[in-house]
Length: 209
Image 1: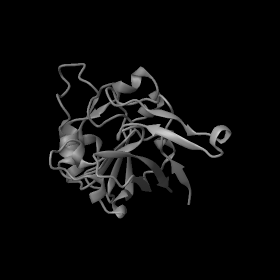
Image 2: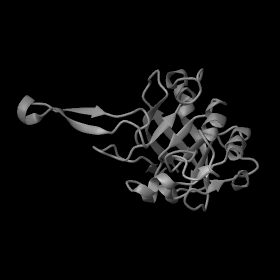
Image 3: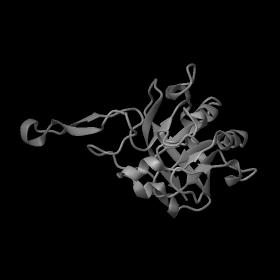
């Protein structure tokens, strides 16, 4: 078995979704001053590679601690999508049926991580998100969001309709994956978050091939 790390490193000042809290990684105690090391981490619940729980967008949505640990180990199907900046991904990009728990959308947009272009990722239409739900799958993407980041064109949807379709159906959404190009079509996906009564949390996402 080969394991592939699909996680962006957590670093001081790393890329975050516009408006989210900045990430700070510093020293709380050092070997020189204290004889041991403790780091101070400050970050939002959706920093870096992370998972969205329904409570992220749904008023009565489930929080992460309500999910059994087994629900973060999933049979995954990789779907490669050739899409340009801010291009909508339609339902026909996905198979009509899958033998998997998770659809992992590979756009290659992780190549823009750390740049302004990262905000201009492709996105799922509401109908595409509903197709994922109809397949009874969770979703993972290699960009900020299945919805557009910001609204830069009147043709783009307002709000977060893809999130509502997915999280409103109690599907998990994993965001900011990286390194999907090295994976086969089918693999085992593991991404365990903190056990927190919250709307999301960073994960260490791993593919087992």
